[in-house]
Every structure is written in C-alpha cells, then in structure tokens.
Image 1 (cartoon, rainbow, N blue to C red):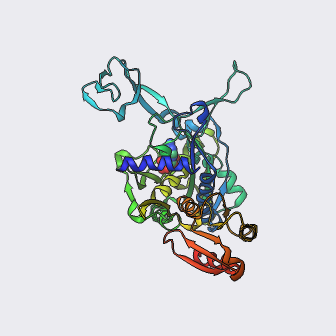
Image 2 (cartoon, protein in one colour):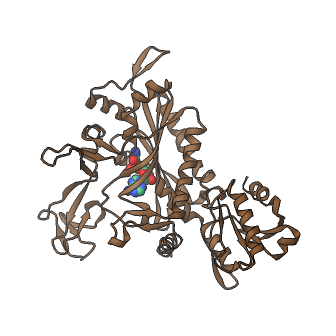
Image 3 (tube, rainbow, N blue to C red):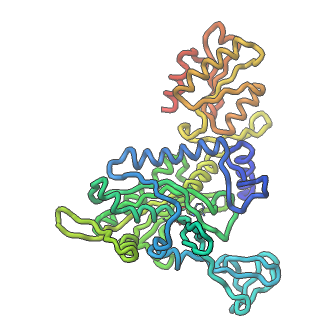
Length: 443
Ligand code: GAP
C-alpha cells in the first residue's frame, strides 16, 4: 500500500510536469532529477516562503549566497575530508557494491549480499572508504592540478564568511545568516525518488549566540521549525514528529540535534535537522585558516567564539513532503478524482480560467480578458484545450484552488462560475468581483 503510494507519486510528478529524470534521453543518472514547469514553481514558492519568514520578516537574520566550489582547507576544518565517508563492500560474486551499514551481517566477517544472496567475506573482500564529496580541479592544467570540492552542505559558505558578514552588517549576537543553495553528495544509497539525491538544495540558517544562550535558542528553533511545516507548508501535524538524537548518534560537531521527521510513503524519515554545533565550526576554521573568527562583545569587552544553532532543511525533501501530504484520491461518480490539496498560496496556479465553449469567440474573448486582469495580481492559467470536466480534473490534480468558467449566460448576466477545488462547490459571482472573491478566500 505504502509502496503503491510512492509509485503513484513518482508517476504523478512525471505525468503532470513536476519532476523528470535528469538527462533522461541519455539514459539518466541515478539520483539526479530535473524539476519540470510546475515543479519549478512549487519549489520556488517553498524557498520564497522560507526566505520571507526568516530573512525578510526577521530583523536578526541576513542572507548570503556563497559559492559552491570551495578549497580543500574548508573541508579539512569542517571534518568532511576525514569523516564524510561511507564504508563500502564489494560482492565478489555479483560485483555489486554496498554500504556496509546497510547490509545484513550473518557472522564474524560475513555479510549476505542483498543482490545475489551469496556470502561476502569481509576479511577477503576488504571494506573500502568512499568520500561522498565531489572533487574537481580548478587549475587550467591537468599536470598541475589544484583540487577543490563541490560543497556537501551550504553551511560551510556561511562559516567562512562569518567575519565578512559581521564587519559589513555590524550585527550583534544573537544573529543569523541564512542561505539557500545547491549541495552535492555522491550518495551510495540511492532510490526513494527525490529523498536522497546527489545534487540537491538546502535552506540553512547558522544562528550565532552567546554560549550561555545556545540551549534556549536551540529549543526555540526546534519548535519554530516544526510549526513552519504546519503553518507555512500546510503539512498535517499527524504526519510530522520530532526525534532527538542519542549521544551515540550525534555528528562529530554536534552537542545536541533533533530531526523533524515526515511520514513518507516508505516510513518516517528526516526532513530537517536542527543542531547545536557549539563553537566547533568557527574554532576549526580559525585554526586551519589562521584567521581570527572570534566575536568581540562590547558590553563585557571580551572576545569569544560564539555557539551556533543550525536549522538545516532540504528544499527537495520539503517539496516531496508537501506533495505526499497533499496528494489525495477520492471516488466521484465511479471515477477516481486526484486532488492535490496544497495550501492555496503554494499552488503553482491559484486560478484557472476556461471558456465553456471554445468555438464561441465572444466567450473566448471574455475569458481571455478576465485571465489578463487576474494575471497582473495572481498566478493564473488559461485553458481551453478540453471539455469542462477534463479541465476541472486537470486543475484538481495540480492543486489549483479555484476554476473560473465563462459560459453563454456570462455574456448577458456578467457573471462567472467559480468552482472550489476541495469541495467542488460552485458559486455564481459577478465578473468584476471574481478577483476579490478569490483573494478573500485565500486570505
Ligand atoms: N549542515 C548540516 C547538514 O547538512 P544534513 O542532515 O546532512 O545536515 C540537512 O542535511 C538536510 O538536507 C536534511 O535534513 C535533508 O533535508 C537535506 N539533505 C541531506 N542530504 C540530502 C540528499 N542526499 N538529498 C536530498 N536532501 C538531502
């Protein structure tokens, strides 16, 4: 049943132009995906809401857009060069490669190959370390290479710019730096659609505080980020939960960490992690770069390295959760109606306008005029390429909250029919009041 939902969602996203396989005509690449026309709009809206909530509406957070390619020193300091690794085991029989922590151990040194089911003896086929970062050469010559890496998290761009931001914005603690951008990981475990990608986007905030205030700030962020998914992304509370990491599970840099998990079709999994990273990052970057990244407190006249609280969200996982949560099927007159019950302001289009008959030029012209009026104010779509029933179903599927139909009576009574996505209820409204009607409904 759950698998069935995942299959349905993958095919739905493809069919309606939300997500396509990357470079499909060349056979594609595993865990690389492209966003189609509707997916691009939804993804942008998710990022816009996050940016507006934290950078535009709050006074203590500023934005940053740092580069993706970063030198080796950054990842020496962050620990990614030494610790961002998976242990891989090769099966000598079927030649497939697996993450050792993901396969069944059946005795001392013996594992069971998940593919061909034969035994793998790890004392002979030795496990090997595999760094998840993508390495690149920034020098123009092959014989004199200068190696750099594609960042595996946007966070490091924030830490290396800590002093730049402090000196140019004159912010006082506590304050945050927010960034949305691409990150790259050569993930070995793939599958589950866009849950684990090799190229993905993050929305991260590094919120710098006085060490004493860090535990309180951490609690605030856990709660605030949880509410964000309910209030701003429209995800149902019962599909979200918090999971605090045990001491053994904590990443090398974290003092504490809580995951926000979503009930994906394949089970509860991480949507976002909120970590108290202590002073690890700024201290390590100070040591490796030999630049002082401390903060001078005007009140106490003391210098110290601030602590940092990091709410780290994935854009693609949020997108996935929003779609899974909104996807809904119901039976109407013996047929399955698919409705994407998106929060109205996240829907790719808020209104769709149709003429009931496309061979009546007066109707088409009235519908097009209404479409252009609305287009100045709200995301709207015009469609006359099918019969009305089919046009409604198409919009239900992509989550358009309102469909406005112009019919023959509209020419005389100057009214249109407005149909609601979730209830299918229809209202007859004066044409010149249609926009206000929709605006009021979406608040
Ligand atoms: N700076 C901390 C950090 O990067 P993380 O838990 O590794 O922590 C944070 O990643 C978030 O980024 C995850 O909760 C997830 O939403 C997203 N993410 C991480 N790896 C991903 C991948 N391979 N594909 C898609 N999203 C990913």
